[in-house]
Image 1: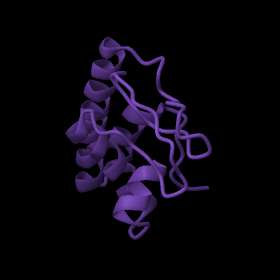
Image 2: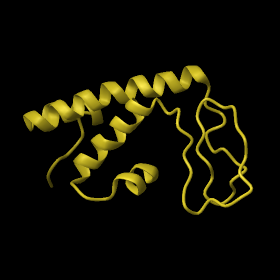
Image 3: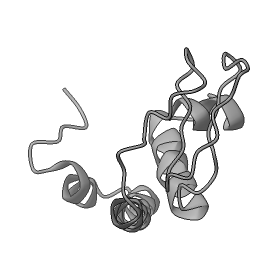
Length: 109
């Protein structure tokens, strides 16, 4: 999420930024190496399916334990969640939002 906010900005509602996050995962497939402005050389070289550099230590891939099968599972779940969230937003349907977040999800106090 930090990467999406850093590259796409913080404008828009929380709902829009959440959908942007899901869409980023679905479209990128988590195949892009993610780094941050705080990362400094030396940078590691990784062959892991998902690479997100630790902003404090650029030789550490914080996602090194994610397998290829898990990456695919995460991407598929993000695609499905984005489709659901997009529909819920377009229809302004709190029931559909509860499909994502569970029956206890509150939209108002």
